[in-house]
Image (tube, rainbow, N blue to C red; front, side):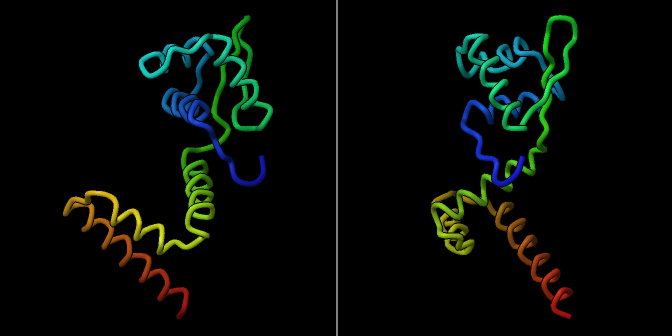
Amino acid sequence: MSGIQKLAALQLAIMQVLWERGEATVAVVRESLAGDRDLAHTTIATMLVKMERKGIVDHRAEGRAYIYRARLQPEQVKTSMVTDLMERLFAGNLTEMMSHLLDENDISREELIRLKALISRKEQEQEVRDA
C-alpha cells in the first residue's frame, strides 16, 4: 500500500460506504449505493476484490459472507488524491490551485473567514518553525 492511492469514482463511493458504516458486506454496499447507481452484486464484489488486492480494503469471513472494511482513513485518500490533482493540473503549484478554486467558486463570507483563519494559523506555524 505505497504511493498515492488514486481511487476511481466507484471505488471512492465504496470507500465512503465503508467509512460511514465501519464495515459492510457486498449486499450492504450495493444497497447503500442503490440510490446513486444500479450496480450488480457481482460488480461490487469484483471491485472489492480488486481493492483488497491493492491493499485498500480487507475482509473477514462471517459464515458464507465476506465483511469488508477500509484499510485507509478518509484523510489519507483526500491527501493523496488532492496532491495528485495538484501535481497533474497545476504542476505542483499550490498557489495556482488555490487561486483557481477561489476564482471559479462562489465563496460565502463564512468560508472566507475560515480560509483567512487557516492561512493565519499556517503563518503562525511557519513562524514557530523558522524561530
